[in-house]
Length: 476
Image 1: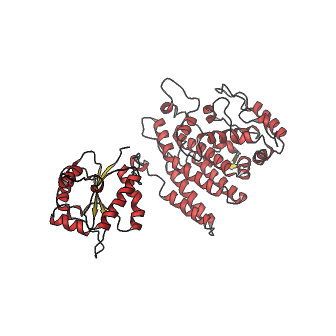
Image 2: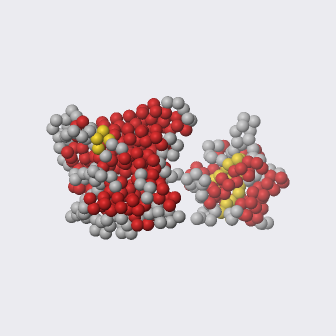
Image 3: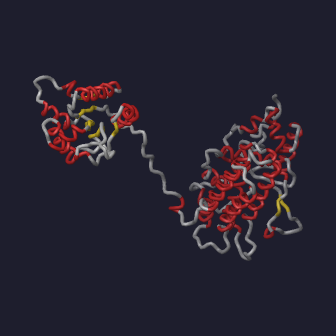
């Protein structure tokens, strides 16, 4: 930090004005600023004009405070001796040589028109108001910060261009975000018709996501690149829905909120299916929505855990979901929560490092897109682990925990660690519907045997350690 050195230029209007200038000089010195002032530095026998010129042009003087009152302005404009000579030197420096920040007008008086009294050559410059004791105290910090080069308001670092500038596709921050804000205000203000606001918000999210569904052969060189691009466009909807869950998760009555969440999940499930109007297709066309639904499902689970909406989680894991008509191939009309699982082999070509093969390309994408500070990737992995546990204890379901490939050996998950205490196990009990930790351990082990071996999980293939299974409900 450059050490400031200040020269004060002023008019010897009268004794009181000279004492006021000295008061400011003393105060600046007390704040660590080197001040050059005729009262301090102009000794008997010195040429005062040479002194003034040296101070104005001295390279070591970082700032010149020009104390402007009526007398100073009149003398400067009339080019009278003393101030006139000094102001001629200053004006020359202002207009020709010195950077703009060196000369700072200090306004001591205002005219009848309310304008500050300044010499003509400083009329257009930014000034600081010291016209009263109150103004001095109010603006003192501004002056000191300016002299030290530490302004109160600093221009932020330039960021990246917004997505809507660099992307050709529309971003849903207009309609969906507007609908979310309307819903938020309605909830916070306890308005009637919350269902109407919520329905408008959900419909706008689903409508945007549905518009990105492939309905004809994509004219692209790489289907993997298209899947990656579409997943990026769909991420905004993921975030809108997360914000909604976090908003209502703690304040809306569990039964009503459960119905709303399950309705949303059924709409999401339909997005990953083939649009019914298509007769010829390739399954990879729908990979983007398959990954989007999987990602959004895990974020919803993580958001509900964060909100403490354990009964809603129980409803999600225990409910049956209506199967889209284009996916029905038999008498079954309903699916369980594992219908939200998604993957994409097409992403392997665009995400895998050269010479390597990813065990779970979709999980790699989720990791790259995990940019929410309130729901970091570790909480998404925890949601995946909880879903795996629910799949162990729910017959006819199967869940491959893709994100756990990014969980290091010995990694612990707070929800499961805390469940060693009885009061926290009760939360897990609400989600699972199983009251006894021993019963839960037994059902998880049975389900684990039903699943068989998980390939590629070298260090925690049984997942029981990650679930803290043996320690559940062992502490008060």
